[in-house]
Image (cartoon, rainbow, N blue to C red; front, side, top):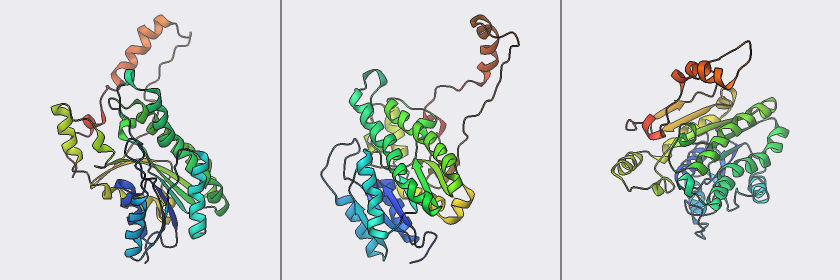
Length: 306
C-alpha cells in the first residue's frame, strides 16, 4: 500500500467506532500503520466490557492489506495513556501522529449536573487529550517531527444547552491545541483541532423530547462520520504539517469550516482611569453593538449538511 501516510505510525483514540473508525481506516488506506485504541465503553462512559470494536477495525484494516494493532488502555489516566504510546512503539517501533478522538457525553442542565458527571467528562475529554499528547511529546521532540489532531466541538466554540462539562472540556481542548502548537513548533511538531459533525452513538444520546430536538436529531442523522477522515489524514500528512499549525477547523459531510480565534474587536480607553460608573456610562455602550448573542451551535449551522 502507498499513500500520503506511507510508513507513518498513527494512533487513533476512540478508534473502534464512528469518527475514530473512519479515521483509522482512511489512515491505513493511505499507508499508515495504525494503533486502534478503544476500550469498548458506551457513549456515556459506561463499561460494556468489550474489546471487540478495536479488534473489528484492526481486522478490517488487515483484510484490506494494511497494518494495525488494537490497544485497550484508557486515555483517562497518565499511566494508561503512556501504555497507548508504548503500544505504538512495541508494535511498529515509532510514532508519527496522534488523533485524540476518544470522548464521552453526560449531558445535564447546569444546576442539576452531578459532580461525578462533570469530573468523568473532564477526565476523558480534556485530561485524556493532555495525557496522550504529553506521553507522545518526547518521542516527537526526539525525532523532530510529529502531528497532533484533537477533536473539539462547536458546542464549545459557539454554545449548547445542558453540556457544561462537555463544553468546558472541548473548549479546553481548543486552547490546549494552540498551546501545544506554540510549544512544539520548534521541534517540527504540529497541533490542530477539528470540530466534527457526525451521527455517532455519542450524538445519538441527545434528547428528543421536543419537536425542536427531534428536528435537530433528524438533521444530525445526515452527517456521515467517515467524512471527517480525509481532512484528518491531510493534517497528518507531510504537506499538511508544512502548511497548517495551531488552527481550528470544522468538518460536516462535504463542508469544511475554518474558525476564527479570539482577538480584541473593540477597545475603550480612559486617560483618567475607570470607575464603575464610567464603565457603565461609556465602556458598556461602546461594546454592546459587538456582543455575541447567546445561541446554540445548531442555530449557527442551521442549514442542512451538503
